[in-house]
Amino acid sequence: MHYLKNIFILLIILLLSVPFVAAASDYDETTSGDEIRQLTAAVNELVRELKEQQGNNRSVELQKLEIAINYLSFRSRRIEAREEELRDKRRVVESLEDLLAKVEDDEEAWEARFSRQGSDSGSFSSSDEEKEDKLNFAVKQWKDRLDSLNSEILQLEIEIAEMTDELEDFESYVQDRLGILR
Image (cartoon, rainbow, N blue to C red; front, side, top):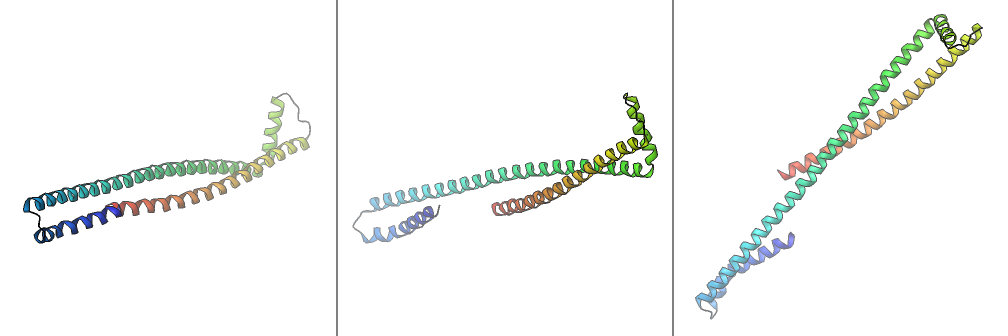
């Protein structure tokens, strides 16, 4: 593109100098007129090519921006999906915390509930110690699951923050490019 500008400037200089050269030379006026027409046609062709190239460059920039905007949309939807996953995990954590609070408030009722479940399935729960062991095992599993979910939530929060930062950086780049094209 830079070379086209140089050629364009050179042709303009030549075009402007032709009348002076023509006046000083032995050429007749028709030859000088033909040369001027040829130079004018060449300059017009260069101007047309320069405009076409600028249009192509603008078109390429617009295509790049369209791709960037599609990428922004994709990343935004991905963040939304991660946020939905985060909300689901938080709901499960709340449910588990409520369940654990209920168990701690009334352990005897929960032990009875576990012993009934065992007798319904055909096994007999003979001692209070077994009932307590079953309940303790279930509580331990729930707490382990709660710890695991809290760890997953932390990872998701970090991932969402990173993705949001990337999205904001990319969005500012797109805004800058749009400003340049205007």
